[in-house]
Length: 312
Ligand code: KG4
Ligand code: ZN
Image (tube, rainbow, N blue to C red; front, top):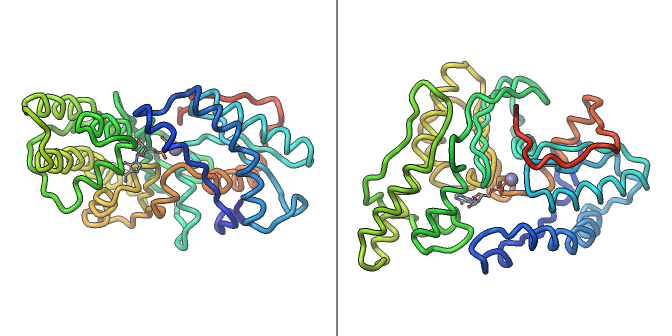
């Protein structure tokens, strides 16, 4: 629940991490069932924490994609039901845009034009934002997303799920010990992370057993090999386009080494949401919805989920 897109009244997250950790990754069928059992209690908790009644609510925002269709269907249908019952405007939101809007929930408001790096479990996009709702995608990953690479790398190093926080913890305070390749893709704003993942696999296959010092050194090297192209390519694009700010978004933006690297290397102001607003949350969807409704872009009731939605 947010007020004016900038003030969080409540932000309740029902994490499924513990459940999926048992399987080493997200199981779509389990995810949608969990959504179904969690969504009404979460809604109730969000209303309670915000201390608002339904008559205080001006609109409903819900993610319509990209994502797992089963989970999206649960959210969209509950949102439609509430909007219909309460005669509220409803707006279907692009989850990637919502990640960017986590930056409006801080003290410092973003200014346009800004360059947005969205790094999540399914996407790594470099996007020019010239106004509310105005996006041009410059680059994307050609294979694995940055978060996906962290998750796969953690599996290779037997560090568990979710991989990003596990790699970050293993690499904390450790110098990169191994040479791993970076995909620079010169002349393009695209990224690629499958090569570094394969190189890590070869490194592990060359070991008889995974000692703690090998794992931490490899984790630090792997983390750095993902961070370097993200930072350097974003800064290159920011200079070329003369943007006023860089905005980071998505679960991987919770990574401290990535945050530090941007803050150390950038001559542009860099906005990064606090870690709990980088990973999936409802407040960012509500902030995005606020601006969509300001632009008179309510969705109506006939929209469907779009699991493959992108910035194109
Ligand atoms: O944005 P998000 O919460 O969900 C998606 O929309 O995908 O991102 C989840 C991804 C996972 O791949 C997870 O491993 C990664 O973000 N992640 C991190 C960190 N925290 C979450 N990656 C690196 N360092 C972290 N601290
Ligand atoms: Zn996300």
